[in-house]
Length: 366
Ligand code: ATP
Ligand code: MG
Image (cartoon, rainbow, N blue to C red; front, side):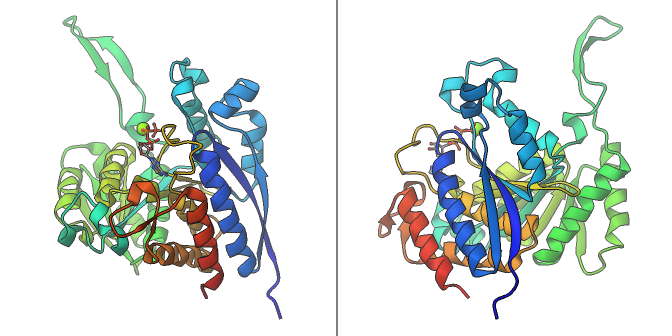
């Protein structure tokens, strides 16, 4: 007998540029993988970004945020484009992105950097260093020096102009990102490296103290600590040593970009942003790529893999997630490549065809 059907509601935010193209493909993949696993999705598509600006004058309409909040997970394409680049700050598509992160209170940003065997030559590192890299950066997203007060400009008592920011972390902020990171490490290979600058900064010393305290709840996860300068170096020297990395907002900003370059294929990389409860936000790390929009050239795999993260980290549907991940690998094994990952001897396909091949493969996974 068939298992009982589980139902989830998903808000789709196609956005701008290649966003609608990659979301259309990922939606079909999600739908099929779900139906093969006894899962039924109710999709609701809402405007956001530049397209919302053109439609109703704001980058994140209230109805869009309300729909997102009420759903079980949110899948976002990409937003922005040349057309709105000269807009004032509050009328920029990117402002909508900050607003939805804030609205959903997603404080944990998960960015995997995996060097797939089929794409090892895309890496900016030497083959022997890049081969087998499979790491995840868990970045604190809503606290730290980007938000701490006091901040601003001033003048010293000697009349010297200054600019200043403050790094503040409350215990609850470190504890909750720590728990997400330990849970993530548990779902991966059981190793967590916390990155800080505890030899210099009090906020980092506090960070290390709280991470160490939370570690007692996760005796099965192996915890280590590393200073950020060393971590930046180790990511290039020997990235294979890492499984899961947890770090603060600013270090995570830098290290996650560094880690993505190890893989070298922007069209392949997904991300997840998670809150305490409530829906997570899942999106490819690439932008709206206006240079190739509307030409069926976009690589949909980053968004398809974001849909897999949605299943795994957003809904706890690990088996359905695995089905999608395996289908992506299988499709690459068949030699199919979009332009961004093309190399001699492989077959160049468009966004749609890549999507159709992944669908076929989703069907045959067990
Ligand atoms: P943003 O500011 O939104 O991040 P950006 O211009 O900095 O935008 P992208 O939009 O990611 O960065 O584009 C950078 C380059 O990578 C462009 O040449 C684009 O065509 C290419 N690119 C990005 N995403 C993809 C994709 N999914 N498939 C193929 N090429 C892509
Ligand atoms: Mg950019």
